[in-house]
Length: 450
Image (cartoon, rainbow, N blue to C red):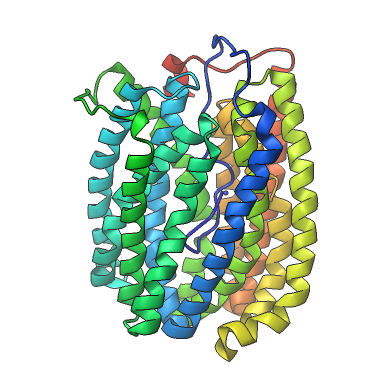
């Protein structure tokens, strides 16, 4: 459900910014309100860099790792990303508790919690590697350290996006894939080091990005001082972050469950082939993700009616743009995939065709979640949307994958996308009718129980 990255499905706006308080004195000028169009275009330009880079990464992995090797890469990265989504909402919580403004004390608390939760998560990833034979403990040991810089980058991203500092946010988003590509060209293509080297350069790319984020956003956390992690604000911070993280993790598992089912019934090679079509289809989400990023700050600060109208307009644009791109991708895929990825991946074109309708239907959810989880402060409704997608996708995967393999996984995923999209629209319409004429955003003291 944004932007995605590392070959995994982009999350729909939930890596953005948090709810603010009802009694917040509105600034004279709403942050980012005048620059929605410019910020959208700028984000798309950055995605114009990261999308070909991500595509090149898929080509390299497909050509030099073979389907089974790419399957191992996808599964180990997914394991890290699940915990990164769970612990990566601290920046969102900082913006919420800071009433929409960056607060150094809160940012320092968030960085402290990032280290604590990240180190604990590394242990969980190692345990998963020992238990999951598909990638194993040695590969998990290479990937696990990436969790800490991953959630640190997410922390800064949440603060920056809420403050409408879109350009720096874009730099932090684009650096990991660019650095990963550079590393893979050397280690995988040049030296032929295989899956271990591919995961290693992915890990190093996140560490390098974290160093950049700490330096570029130093005004948010320097001078460094000791701050309590378990005081009132610290507890509220981690409660809100973990609440939104639960939504993220259920969402990610829900729309990745077919990978595990496909691995179980058809093997890693099928996962590798399916993932090529999956990434090609879901690259379309970069468009609504860019729109969601640009409207986050205005939606957070606008009045109730203005925020709802801004969301509707943005959803319409996102749906139209993604539909046009989906048609182009669907027509070109059978002719492009074999020469780019090799004959072993020729079968990815069919799953891609089955994925496209669901990807288009789900595209507006990226924008709707900005209102549901962020503006209206109803993460439980976003959790409901994620659970609907999880249940439907898992159920259909168990029915379709044994008989139809990767195509069955794509159909199951599309049905899950459609179910999640319907649930998101119902939640949005219900919230708009409830809050019409009033602003129900809760004070930070109550966000922990939202």
